[in-house]
Image (cartoon, rainbow over all chains, first blue to last red; front, top):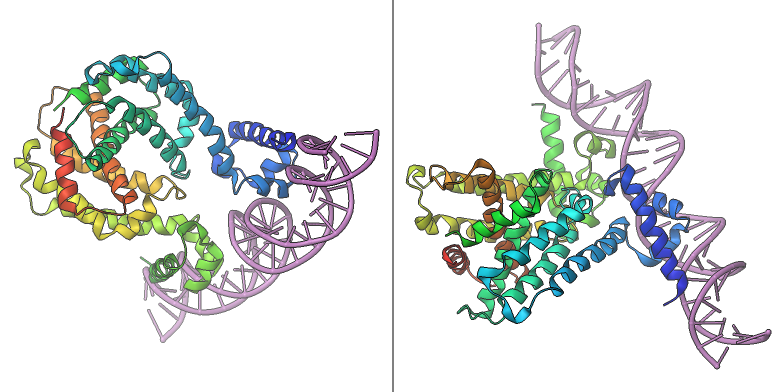
Length: 183
Length: 183
DNA sequence: AATTTTATTGAACATATGTACAATAAAATT
DNA sequence: AATTTTATTGTACATATGTTCAATAAAATT
């Protein structure tokens, strides 16, 4: 890849992080961001449509980190819905680690795209868990079940965010497990 | 209330509905909307901060309709989690009825505020259901449980939207009920 | 090292944004 | 019906947006 492109992305990303310490995402203008990144405003449009695109790209990296945290330590052949407790806590660890970004993701003024990024990543992780477990469901029913369960977890995350991350990940995970086991 | 204010809101709302038939919400500019509504652009700023504000106000009315649909026909003293089947279908009926608006709500380019409007309305409806049912939970646990269950339902709605409302409300409700009863 | 490719720049332009303020007109109040 | 209140208008201004295009500079290729 062309070095110039890489540099431009890096400068924009860096400038965005600086500005996010001063103001909220939707108060940042393209002109301002480009000025700080010391790139021509026209150059910005060669790579992004708007300021959100820069954050979206950055958030992708964060969400990749979440994905990776589920790949490493576990034996995927040994998935068990009764035993997912030790695995699911990673979600809460992850969100707490990057909570300053998740505050933005759950901010009512930002576009839904970050939410959906998180959703689709979590959903594919959830899909891994149910693989092989014959749940006696059609593909369509499974589709809806996955969206149901994935979004339920995000519901907890949103509430956690609204409560200013009041409880430790361990407690959050215990809550989640009790809700899953509940009837 | 001042008649002029009412008229201004009406004209903006009407103009927005016209423009939404041509283009998507975030392509509509304040200037364009004000021109079509035949109000001065400065007047717009006296009432709204941006175009989304107009849609938000309109969507509030839709969400009020959802709330009302749960108030009327049922005996609230007789709530029963095993018997909520006939009541929950109203959600799906409602969303299908206004599906052209819910397409906007679930559009990744729009702000999260509409999602949250829906969320909080549904959540307060859900709260009604669990009132009185001693679930052996602390207030905090109930808080998180409500967000968990409410967002799970919205997860189904989002999937339904993504699937272009492929299934009838009746089937969607059966799916939901099977997931709730599932362990 | 010379050449080719292409990302970046700077300038220009029409339009949009956000704000301010005095003048006007349409409501509400007396 | 006269008066008061206030929403709306028109104008102006600085800044931002989104696009175009030729000139430049930096990278990749030979």
